[in-house]
Amino acid sequence: MAVDRRALREVTGTPGQLVILDVTDQGKHRPTKVARLHQREQLRAELRDVAVVWLNEGRVTLTGYEQVSNVAGQIIEYRQSLQITLDTGQVFSELAKRKVNPNQ
Image 1 (cartoon, rainbow, N blue to C red):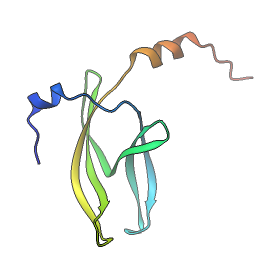
Image 2 (image 1 turned 90 degrees about the vertical axis):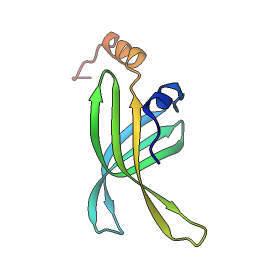
Image 3 (image 1 turned 135 degrees about the horizontal axis):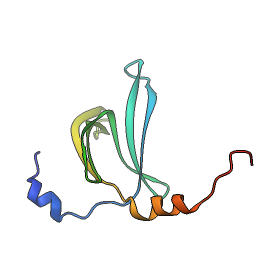
Image 4 (image 1 turned 60 degrees about the horizontal axis):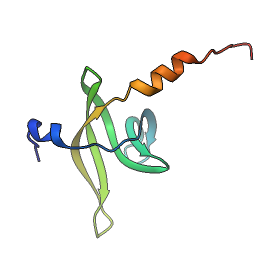
C-alpha cells in the first residue's frame, strides 16, 4: 500500500541501528543482501534483496521484500520500502573526538 509522502513527514520513526550485510539465503540457495533495523537487542525490521533507491540530506530509501509467516506456517513475501533518517549528530561528533592509534 502506498503512503502519501506528506503523511510520512508526520510519522515518528523507530530509533535503532541499521545494518546492511550479505547472508546466505537457504531457501533460494544463493547469497542475498539484507538490511536489518535493530532496536536494542530486538530485530524491528528486515528487508531481503535490499537496494538503495535514494540517498540525500541524511535520508535513505531502501527497497526489498519482507518475509512473514502466516497462520498456516507458510512464508509470505511482501515488497516493502523503508525511509531511513540518519542521526549523524552525536555519533560522528563523538568519533571525531576519539583518537585512535592503530598500534595499540
